[in-house]
Image (cartoon, rainbow, N blue to C red; front, side, top):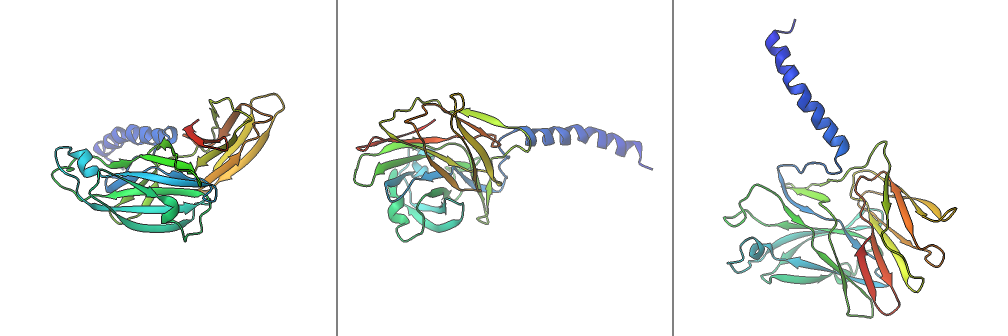
Length: 270
């Protein structure tokens, strides 16, 4: 038989366990492990035959301590194809400049990625300047331009997506729902004069299922699936439909729009 002391202990911890379980169900974000050394967003790589992608890499030594000059250190760059398959992984030197613009197209010149995603992890060793209780998060800016243009349009990161531990193992931090559907209204009225492209990444450990439909009665309706760390790229029929809605099992979906008028582009959160 269990002692009364043991029973009381069980009764004390059961509410905590139950609340933790509920939080895991409700929260879109899995807690970051204590041994994580960095967290990165999952950034987009639009069609590399039509667009050039740039990543604005900040040197965090000067961000953490503006009074000191930036020091070089390494970052881990990972790139995935549209199906979420790892195609490129390399440690790069983050030089002593406060900011470095990296051409993703040049970096992946000999890699078979037409569209996809990438992540960047700062391998910044602990020092007096960054000895804090927390995790560095990379949610920086991505610049996109047409292949024949130097004019870039920028969009910042979406959310904390992938954590990297001390053994360089990665873990997706976002979650899908087992039973609930979430609705995302694209807050933009499209112009038929543009090529309008919808870009959605999968920041979860399972397939993201979604239905894209027009808000007009008896309009467009199509189902899609995105594999883990993959990218969905959809050219919208904005000649016929001006407003779109997304229904998905993903608890935190942040679509990106690429608007191309033939001369230049604009890229934005929708």
